[in-house]
Every structure is written in C-alpha cells, then in structure tokens.
Length: 97
Image (tube, rainbow, N blue to C red):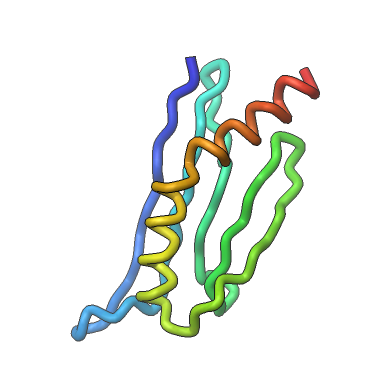
C-alpha cells in the first residue's frame, strides 16, 4: 500500500500577503517516506521540484513574482496533478527495483 502526506508552512505579513512558503508531497514505500514533489521559495523565487526515486531533481521556475499567487498555483497544481507525480515516482521505483 502506498500512503501519502503533505508538509506545509508559509509566512505572511499583516496584510496576509505570503512572503515565503514550503510544502511537499511524500509517499510511503515499505515503511519509509519519500518526497515526490516540492514547492517553495527557499532560493528567493517560486519554484517546483519534481523528485525521482534516484534523487534526481527536475526544477521548474514558477512564473510568479507574487508569492501569494505562486502558493495558490502550487496548491492547485498539487491537487490537480498529485496522482501523476506519484505514478511517475512509483514507475521509477519499479524500474529500478
């Protein structure tokens, strides 16, 4: 069975404008958690990292200077595409098993 969870945090100012965020989706394989996709602003710009089972990272810069918009996009992208990201990761696991 493959379980998943999300880790999320964001910081915003008094006007509720987001100025930094980090969240990711993980899956559980054989009682160990693995990150599959990550969205953050850690490097000063909004981006998405799609991770492989071998540790490769595919970085996609998100086209938003406003981190609140980037966060909204990221939440929707993960909701809409989680199954695809998870299946891609698991396919890599199966091929390398």
